[in-house]
Image (cartoon, rainbow, N blue to C red; front, side, top):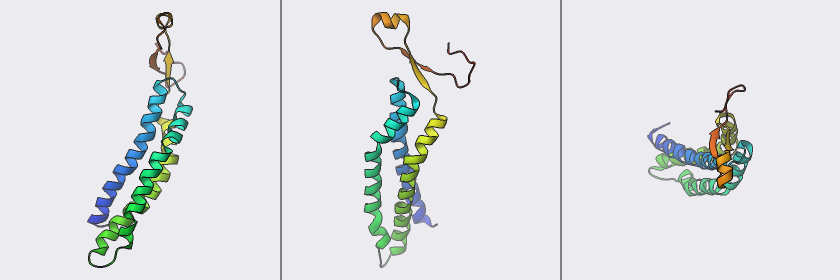
Length: 139
């Protein structure tokens, strides 16, 4: 672990975090529109699959020449390349399988509650967070 691999690690953290944010943001938006939490995270994961895979593939293919570099300064290039290519491959799997699981465990369940006034006026209900534990009132 040298300074070059640490720079690669910072880049990697940013890319993997961006991929995870794509899923979480879309799932939260779906929940706000009234979709159930499981359906929201499933739809978000399938909808954002292609952008995540394309970002990951571009990163892996773009940095593969750094792994194959030879000559003066090859050690620095190899360090960054190995960090980004291997980290992005592992990070993509983490994003696609672990992030939705953590979202299901951590995210609050949100429901849309329509009031009588909203029904009369034809508006949709207000967003209400469901209570986390049984026995709590949602007022």
